[in-house]
Amino acid sequence: MSDKKMKKLTPVQQEYQTFAKAREPRRPVLFNCLKAFLVGGGICLLGQGVQDFFIWNFDFTEKTAGDPTVAVMVMLSVILTVAGVYDHIAQWAGAGTAVPVTGFANSVAASAMEHRTEGFVLGVGGQMFKLAGSVIVYGVFAAFIIGLIKTGIAMLGGS
Amino acid sequence: MLQGHQTWVFQNRPVILSSAVVGGPFEAEGPLAEDFDLLHGDLWLGQDSYEKAEKKMLEEACEMATHKAGLQKQDIQFFLGGDLMNQIISSCFAARTLAVPFLGLYGACSTSMEGLALASLIVDSRAGRYVLCGTASHNSAAEKQYRYPTEYGSQKPPTAQWTVTAAGAALLGPEGDGPKVTSATIGRVVDMGVSDPFNMGGAMAPAAVDTITAHFRDLQISPGNYDLIATGDLGKVGYKIAVDLFKKQGLEIPEKAFVDCGLLIYGEDQPAVLAGGSGCGCSASVAYGHILNRLKKGELKRVLIVATGALLSPLSYQQKESIPCIAHAVSIESD
Amino acid sequence: MEAYFWAFVVGGLICVVGQLLLDVGRFTPAHTMSILVVTGAILDGLGLYEPLIDFAGAGATVPITSFGNALVHGALTEAESTGLIGILTGIFEVTSAGISAAIIFGFMAALFFKPKG
Image 1 (cartoon, chains in turn yellow, green, brown):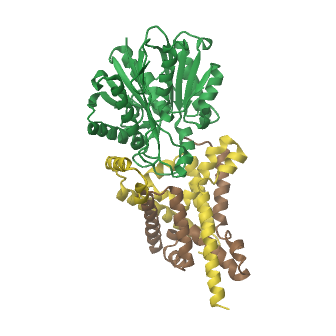
Image 2 (spheres, rainbow over the protein chains, first blue to last red):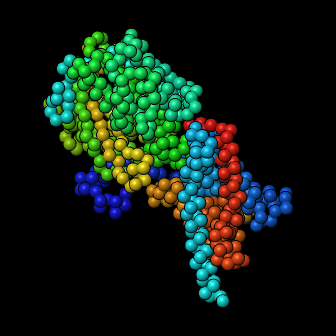
Image 3 (cartoon, rainbow over the protein chains, first blue to last red):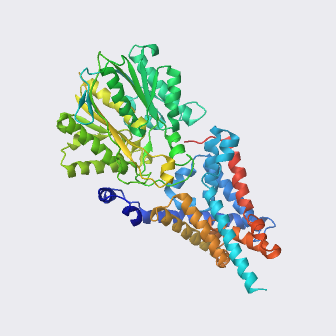
């Protein structure tokens, strides 16, 4: 718990926080990082293979092969989600499955599937981006600000 | 009758005429499977949604308890029910099926004992003859509402708990054969500033200790009075904290007699449960199944069941609130 | 073969950053992914992400950070040709494959399959 949060608590609560923290099982950070490294690296390796597959076998260049590669990775992630195994792999791999684009696809598919019981429009349609929405919002907004700054600098510097 | 500050002593000793416990596939693989009346192999219970499955389990538990007591739905005065779903829909819809006058409760995972305490008060004070109390929880429905979609790949920390898919119901009457409810201590809300929804045990332990301490203080008895003191769902983390808190306060709780339902319901071979079981169905199914069976067999004479609840909502967590908790204790004796 | 090695290592390292944000920073997955996306966007703004892609290939394009990079790229490319308004119109150009695929396959998943709980 951050110090700022701690200060808002009464002394009794603060004492309990310390007491409870000492009795909490530690998260195996190092081991989790190792697992994330292996699985995340592995997924990227797979992505590299898929990209090369498109370059060698079809008329894609390194620049244009990105699109079908992402689409394939998304599809694989959705298949694993639908099979009910993605969440089990993720419990083991942590950020290794969440950080690659597979994590994004899993969050969309999982939310969509889960809310089918609320109907296709309000459930599937409305809830699909429940988890992935913040990624898109912040990505777009950041791109907007950065775009403005860079274009602004170019305009001022250029002319 | 009120004794002390927050404890009721039931002088007329209401009887638990019958109880019924229903569970899901994961519970069927646990060490207490034999104590369930009905176990389902399908998490959906053949229903359209997880929420409807939870409702169905509660209905089944209530109907079986009624049937086991040799009564009809029409004989029952009141049904007290609650669950984890928003607006306690599982209990409301089960009450619709039962068509019994209904009192909806919300105590999060402490609902089982909240219900039992109130039901006992009604029967003891002759405000009702036959009163049914029950609760249920469903792992997927709880995950969907409180945390993440069930197929979402998030990594749960070791302090997280597994919501039990189970329903438990008990039917009380003024006389008859069966374990007797002798007292109940109503807990107050305790908030120690814990705000991690993946560490319910750490949040709830102080509430459990507070209520248990109040119970012994109000009744002027010692912990040795009970063969078993069982908390609802503190899990590994909360249980350890509670044991240490008791030591710190100088309350002599014999460790062998102090257990947690969340640690009893699943076995070592079910690591997915992380810190242990949780949910309304956890304390209900273990208390109304396993513990009552042991009482009836004569293995136990006097037990104190302390159901613990974390009173947060997904919204309160997002609004940076901490987690207030509560615990209700009910004592049951065999004849 | 060297390309595969660096794809593995760089991709793995970005995931380790994510894991640290989750375990040490105690951020939620949504917070963590948002931080990574914004980081990718900032790195591209500084001109550092494209060289990383040249070096590590899929190790840089598969993690969610590349999403931020792609959004900035789309915005800047369009702004170069059509001026300031390009920032708005170009943002989704590069990323549309990923988002469209996620929506389409996600919808199909919901159409044909039930979650396993």
